[in-house]
Image (cartoon, rainbow, N blue to C red; front, side, top):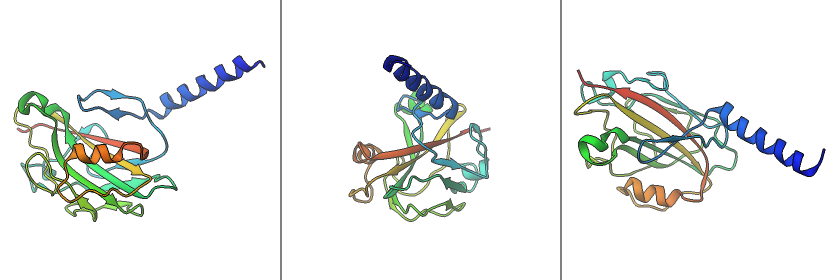
Length: 187
């Protein structure tokens, strides 16, 4: 095999691996692109990925965070970041609505229990709270993105930092990421 053939085979394998893993990056405008880096996963026993979030976890219920499970944290990870936001709020609110921002979570975190704020530093959400605020869409069904990032550093941001400040701090430090999407519409 010639050098060009080997390079072509490697490129095909990398592309197919990315497609097979089905990983996605969610952009600020709600678009999804394929960017899986590793094996990090974020799941919930309360709803499936792209499933309906039970009202218990929303403004129509107890407004507590759903249980979350974390697996596949890369070996060189120094901290985890968890962000929950609603890109579908662009239409009614004029911006992505930030529901939950927590960073410097321990790499040993494997479970975040229902209604239990994880130990870490909490950022300020769009509604002015540093605690979880569940789905409460004013107009239609919205998608809620629970995004987990494995970082090769600890972030040196003060409590009540914004999502944008956290995202700037993460630049160049993301080892892996995972997304869990839930949907909700008020009756």
